[in-house]
Length: 109
Image (cartoon, rainbow, N blue to C red; front, side):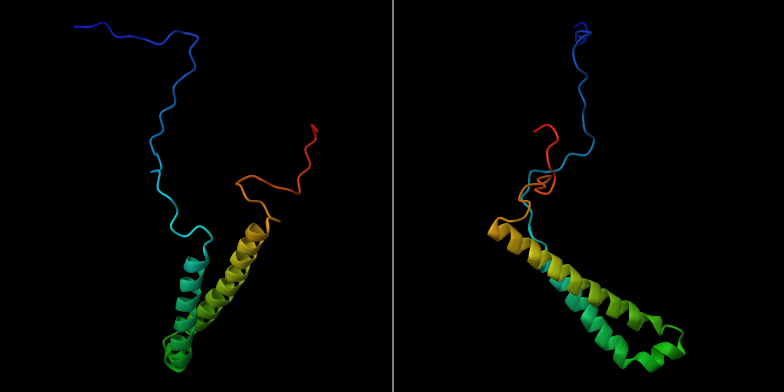
């Protein structure tokens, strides 16, 4: 049987992560596809709930239409944000790397 080995007392502690992300490339980097699908689904749901508004109101679920309209509206705002972000990246005017903020001045400089 072998003796257990211990790290030297001045060695930095080794941190083992319990959750490790797999090295897989992102499917939709800019988010436009995901936001578009969600916006379209909310718009279709708003159309359906608008057509059934009398029946939903009678069941006490008239608020569903407002939720669907809100989801579609927020989806449009999200699309505008994503399109602007892609445009800034293509023009090179916005942050291109995580944490790369061009508006912050370096106090050490």
